[in-house]
Length: 167
Image (cartoon, rainbow, N blue to C red; front, side, top):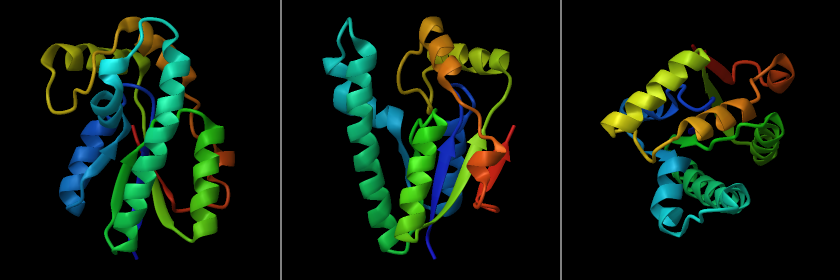
């Protein structure tokens, strides 16, 4: 049975690097929210009111990414998604939808120290390599880091074996 691989973690944790490696191992493309957001909306990004603008577009992108992922699963192909679900509530809604649809999934949680993640983001901004999607300022890094709600036992309850942690 095809598996939906969900990659989550705070900014700079290595999610895109992990998704790219997993995509090579599974021979399926990673569906990465940041790349979609930049491609579809970067040109229209406002100078003010960024978070409400971003939230509405993120919702649309996540919906479309999941639609593509479900198509892959329906064809018997594993799918990899990186959706930026920083809030427990949003992750639980996804798990419940997947459970009710009878989908098989595995959640890959990545994290490391805040200092290491910040160092990685600064390096990614400078190098603009394979995992670069957009410049992440210090302000955005700290704000996004503070938004991350770590995975706790209650989130995993009833989903034993579905979680894989990388630190």
